[in-house]
Amino acid sequence: MFRTVKETARAVAPVAKRAASSNVSQSTSSSSSSNIALAAAGVAAVTALTSMNENKKAMCAVEPVDMAILKELAEIKKVLANLDPTSKILGQIEAGLAANPDMIMSKHFDLSYYNSLSDGLKARLLACCKSGAENHDSGVGVYAMQPSDYDDLKPYFDKVIRDYHKIPNEVKHVTNWDLATVADRLPAGGKLDLTKLGLGVTSMRVRVGRNLASYPLPGAMTKEDRLNMESDMVKVFKELIEDPAYGGNYYSLTPGSPYEVSEKFYQYLVKSHIMFKDMAADTYLASAGIASSWPFGRGCYVSADKGFIVWVGEEDHLRIMCMKKATVLNDVFDRLKSACDTMERICGNFAHSKSYGYVTSCPTNLGTGMRASVHIKIPKLTAGGSDAKAKAVARPLGLSIRGMGGEHTPIGADGTVDISPSARLQIQEAEIICALYEGIKNLMEEEKKA
Ligand code: ADP
Ligand code: CIR
Image (cartoon, rainbow, N blue to C red; front, side, top):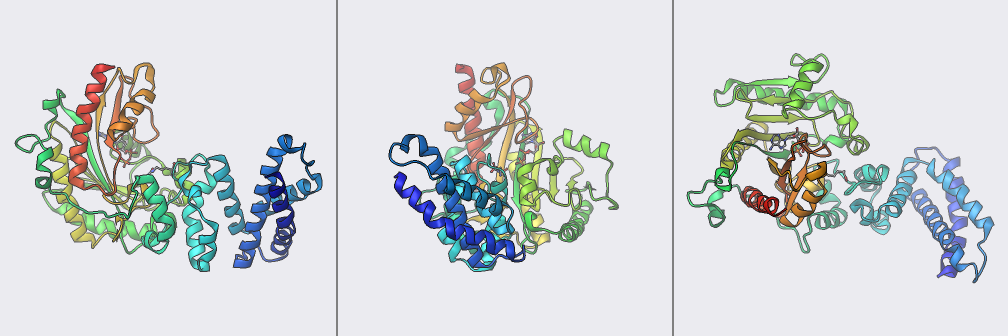
């Protein structure tokens, strides 16, 4: 083993050296495939070196470490890190795998597939992988940049998607909102009534992520794209505002927009769970380019009764949602279906993939793009202020636990959490809302037992 590693390091060292010097002497924007291959060889050399170094104590009885190679390769590593962006990101992906072997992006990044691509597709793949390359604590680490990325880079994305969504075979996603098709899972009368589970008025929300086929996905949008898309959406919202079934207002964060709101009002909207948080603070979204040009092109439409909301310019072009403090889940689900139909009629078809359903920036949201959640109190499962036990109990029930302000926020001091079915892909919309109802029932039983 030691000999093999060392031999590898020896074999690739001259190649890596050439990579370093050839890149240094060339323009920094060079990304020719030969440079990439050389840089990749450099990265391999560094990996071999690292492994060799780690093993040196155990192996020194066999043969001492060659300090000259060690020094030489450390220098190459430094040069590679400052080379053209292509070499840099390949090195970051490699380092990401070492730092976090479970990260889905780097786990499935296959250099031979990458090398088989055209220069254009290579650049597109690396752009998708940038977030995980720069944030080694990512769980997924990859965001699509164009609606067509999932299909054009299918050999890579299919592995990522099947791994995250735990789909062993070919993905076959079907869109179906019709609750009549899941009648066997509904209580008699078809109502998903939370009072039957012992709950009172509950804060419920169902959202879907949607993207317009005519723009790049948020990670690749220019400031101009963002402003143009917001203008297109303002035309759509004007139609809704004139419709008595919707009414309401559009609130923009774009400086100078006729719909611009004050910082104070924006904070009120965030606190009221109506508007999204400052994305620039999210390092995953920032690395992906999704948070770029903040706050330009960002805003939200709110219906007159505040129950129907559309976010513009967050992780997806649109997040369309219905919210209500009520007792029957069907209310928000049925209203969202009808509102999505209205939106799609006005906006034109949303970006869609034959294999993966509705296209979203993050592969975790593909398919339905739907998250259906309620805020419920589980003080025993969250005793001591930690959500660890609640998460451990919720996972096998197919539920995710989030904080009161959404993802990556703390749970309520009184033990209130946000719960939602985790599945988004190869599950139908109608099944998700049933899964939420069943999940609430199961989690409350666990709370009683705790
Ligand atoms: P998303 O659900 O779109 O993935 P987040 O988890 O960040 O994004 O949540 C977005 C906002 O929606 C947050 O302010 C969160 O508190 C709010 N929210 C989510 N579910 C509910 C709910 N059932 N009731 C009230 N607010 C909710
Ligand atoms: C990660 O990989 O951990 C982040 N990119 C977040 C992934 C979760 N998905 C999401 O927020 N839509």
